[in-house]
Image 1: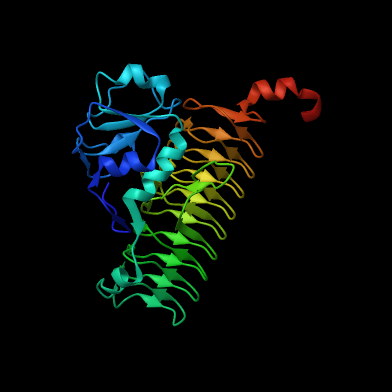
Image 2: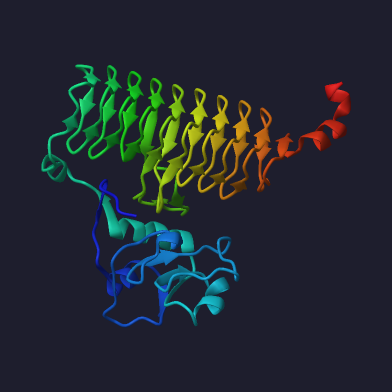
Length: 325
C-alpha cells in the first residue's frame, strides 16, 4: 500500500531496529535494510511485517519478507522466513511503526500543489481545503468543514457542516452528514504500566461509490492496511468504524453500531441499533444482527443472530420465550 498521507522514513537499517526493541535476529545479515513496515498481506521481500500469536495459522504461506513474532510461533516460521524474535510483540510493533512513519510536516504540506477544485463545486467560505487535495464535480462542502491534505473527493459528494476528513479517498455520489470525523488515528497502542505507546497509523479510509454516512459518525483510518467501506453501504447517526475494518456492499448499520478493529464484514449485512461487533472477526454475507446484540465470534453467511453474546435468533427466542411472548 502506498500512502500519500504519511512519510515513509525507510529504508531502515537493522541496527536501528535492534537498538529500539528487545529482540533476537535470525536469518538476516548485519547490513539488512527494510523498505517499509506493513501488514502481513502487503509484505514485500525487502519489507518488514509481524504476526501475533492469534493471527498465525500453520495452513498459511507467508511472503518471504522478514517477520516479527513471538517464541510461540518462531519454530514454525524460522525455516521459511527471516525472523526478528521478540518477547512483547505489541510493544515491538508500536515502537517500529513510529520508526518507519510520521505525518507530513507543515513545511512538507506547504510544498504540495494548491487544491484542485472543480468549478461546479460549492465550497462554503468557512470551509478549509488543504493543499494537495482534489475535489470533483458538483461537490458541496458546507460551513466549518475541513478536508485534509492529499484527500480525494469524487463527483457529486455532499459533506455536512463541521465534518473533518483526512487521510481519505471518497468515491462518487457519497453523502456525509454533519459533525462526522473520517480518517483520524485509530485506537491502537501497546500497553505499558509506565507509558503506553501509540501505533502509528499509516493506512487510509476508502469510501466507495454511493456510501451514506449519518451525522456524528467516526471512521478511523487503518494502521497497517486501509479501512474500506463498500458501495451503497449506509450508516445511521452515531456509528463508529475502527481501524482496518473492511465492509462490503449494500450494508445497513443502525444508530450507535460499533465495529472494532480488523473485522471483515460481507455484503448485504444489516445491524440493529446499539449493536457491538468485536475485533478480528469475519461476518458473512446477508447476515442480520438484531438491536443491542454483542457479536463475539464469526458469523456464517445468511445467518440471523441476536443477544449478548449473539446467537442464532430462533435459539435465542426459544431460550427466552417467556420474555418475548
